[in-house]
Length: 249
Image 1 (tube, helix red, strand yellow):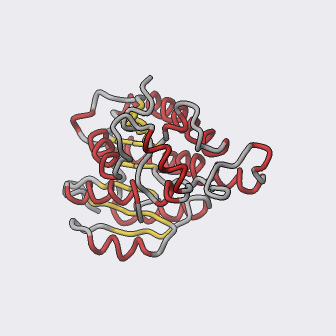
Image 2 (image 1 turned 30 degrees about the vertical axis):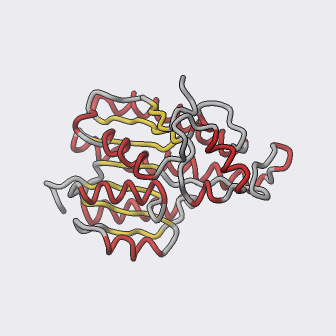
């Protein structure tokens, strides 16, 4: 069990925002745990510094979430930073699913991966954080959870809006033990998820970004890294919109 170096767990860490965040933590010298359902995460972890660890698990299955957290606790005895980033956004012909078209099985899968997994990971990580009276939870929401989006399907938008409400309660309940919980709400970011949209949709969306470009996963990782740091100790229950100006509340 390592007492002096913080442990950061990042879900959905094999690509995109999750991978950029894991790289950020590893460069900071944290013991970084990359969790993803893709076995490729094992090779990725081996390339990172500071003894990064890989866990292959499907966050949509509660038993695999429990098994993954049991491995983290057994190996490190702690979980200081939790980044709930894993998420899916099924597309229909490169576009959104309308409400009346969404199969119930797909609805349930999106909720399980995008929202229920965050609940389960927090439920299991909070006792470890309380034991140390310090912790950082960063949940990845979306512009689609902040305002209406022409590209967000109902199940995706519902989970990302739900993530914000859940984070506020986590912030309130964690505060007595110096545990903060915050959200990052990305706008259009170059990732496998956005690559699922049609070229026409991507081009139109990029044209509408005031800063004139899609974001890079590193743009989000920088914000996550700040919220996970000691410097953000007085920030909790907040939503950080990192979207190139596409939503300005």
